[in-house]
Length: 337
Image (cartoon, rainbow, N blue to C red; front, top):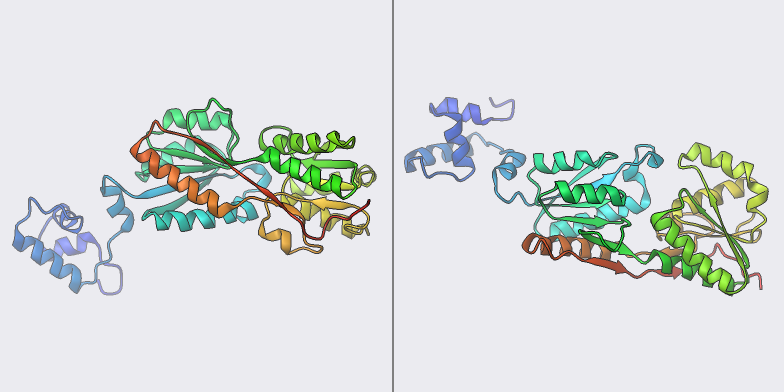
């Protein structure tokens, strides 16, 4: 017994009690046990240095204090979604806020929203924060879950019936457009892996600012798989270079494009300027440092956890919070005036 973890069965056998009785004492359900039995169990637990299963304790409670972070492990992440700079930053700040709220965090990555319902029920969760799924998935989850849900980094219509904390993607694109125009750029290419939801809003904002000045803003759809994107860049290199600036809808894509262009002898920003989105850690790890749009993950995480706390008390009072963004000027854009 001393060479392995002591179990409830070990304690029960040594005292001649049932495992149910020992378990009840461990979890504070002592109404049916005598004070002497409780004393004997607690004494032996101390002597044998019994380590309780935290999962068992939480699952036995009406309020487990477990908040689930459910993340879409989309194919574009190549099954490594937690390595994405934006996602990892979001999880980091959510962990801090959930801990501050007196709860526990549990992470689940999946590309099937049906797993979320099963996982939340299995762990007796008090609420979930969902990252990266689509509007149809959120509607499905709202109909299936019986606990509060907050959508984090998700696009939805104004008619949705769940809490949503997002950013002003349109204004982010608009800020990029106005900034590039102020630097003399009149022909700008937007790179994204889709033409809907958040990425489309960023493109629409760019278009409004650029076209207002009489410039041109176009969009190039790039593959979701990294190995296919490099071939795309290579096959469209001349087309890309016909623009004076590129707005990539994420820092990851911007940094990836910058590395590819530099490997082909293209000088950034002398030959072409590049702007990203997110202000993730990667934006200052590359050279030249990336001009990008900052979204504050710390504030976003705080709002998400506050929303979840409110919904636990008033489940019908869901809100949609749109947080501001701002452009961060660094070194990857040239002034061509």
